[in-house]
Amino acid sequence: MYKIAILGYPIKHSLSPKIHNYWLKEMKINGKYTAIKTPIKNLEKTIKNLSNKGYKGLNLTIPLKEEVLKYINSKNKIVDIIGAANVLIFSKKGHVKGKNTDVYGFKKSILKLVKNKRKEIAIVIGSGGAARAIVYVLIQMNYKKIIIYNRTKKNAEIIKKDLLKKHSSKLQTKINCENLKKIKNNIKKTNLLINTTPMGMKNFPNLNIDIKDLRRDAAVFDLIYNPLETKLIKESNKRGIKNTNGLDMLIYQAQKSFFYWLNKTPKITEKLKKILEKEIK
Image 1 (cartoon, rainbow, N blue to C red):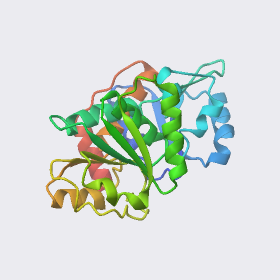
Image 2 (image 1 turned 135 degrees about the horizontal axis):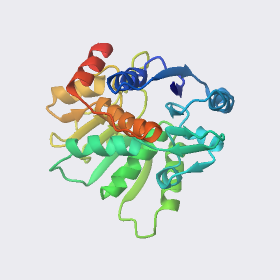
Image 3 (image 1 turned 120 degrees about the vertical axis):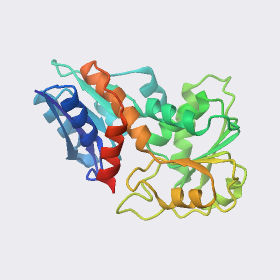
Image 4 (image 1 turned 45 degrees about the horizontal axis):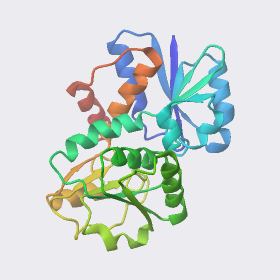
């Protein structure tokens, strides 16, 4: 039987077990996907333990995507560039390979959201592993300017430094970093607003930013999927601003993760989406 798990802290909110166990059943594969609460201090021990128990691999979520790089034997180009991994693949000899499917998931989701929209200024809120993946994709999409906002400006500047170090000097995108308190200064100019933090997630405080000055032709992407409508999404709907939550991104990155472990690509269906939406509600 294939054994796979997701590690994170908190982890109760995760829909990944629902998604992967659905696919395992649909594809008649003998396997089980579980969620394991794992604070940073237990990460190394948990990885070694699960690898020794014959697990096929792991997903990683908040706050482990950057920390896990310490325990990887090899990584692909994207992980090296952005400095975050959300997938581990175990070999029988104990070799741990790191990959990132957040990039794939975000890219598939964002292309639908910003189709026919100007790619000038994007605001990214947060400085974790998901933020790194997103800034990387926005650079590939040739946004003219990306502003990373975080409660601790220094953490945003680390992302900028890491990504600039890995890109060539020909980079066309300008990257700025600011304290989240100053977001009002640029919100009226932005074409795309993205929240990568857990603020607004179930059992977390709301992301308290005022979007009344956000352009109506802008787009909003909130990576949170539980609840389906965060305060940010509700405010966007009230103002008629095109938006999306993180559910599609979650499913797309899960699809790519599944392929990395089992070399099979599961189908994304409306039936699966409805099951997940029902679970959230």
